[in-house]
Image (tube, rainbow, N blue to C red; front, side, top):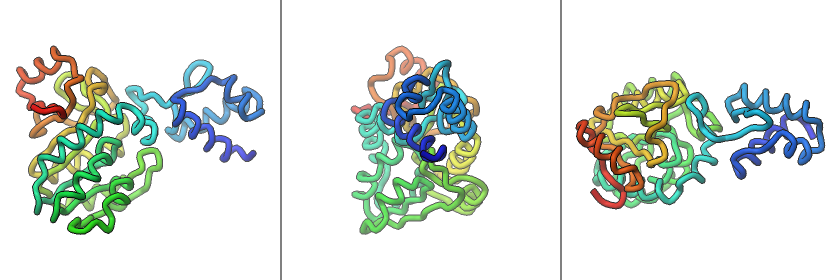
Length: 255
């Protein structure tokens, strides 16, 4: 097996399992541990996984965001409820910006039912789901495709966003600490910030597991959003502290 094929399969295994030991990978592929070490080093350099002592994982950290397919498997039902609630802020005739992210892609069936609607997005999954839907004017943002995030990023994407204005932005974030939202990847951060700047109203969609976590780059103060959509699985004390701090919380199960 060619090294690039083996490395592709390693990532596919981690998408399914979340993590794997060095020994298990070496046995699965019938190669030495040193060969797997080199594979993991190469994949970590590409930002595809995070090495651990004796293995590798796709679990997020403060500097690493996991593959979008793995994230889609985490808290899937909660993200679907959050997306449904966030879509309730959208009205026919609006223009809506939507970023990359597994929660953002869960918006697809709800947005498709709101017609007419203009959707502006860099999210390839959302582009695929909404393309050809009656009553949906789809503006697909170009740029450099990142398979890890299944979206388009970079100078071309951000330049296009600066020339656009939308009624609303529905965004996601990988970490919330205190009253601030964060993200690990600088390129992803640039697109999210451009959407915040180009939208009249902004809502942040965050499942409860993202609270109390820190990531490398500051995205925005939660007060910059017209509302933060989460679920009632969020700790009551944390929710109350945010509300007392003036943050507008919306729960997927009902405000």
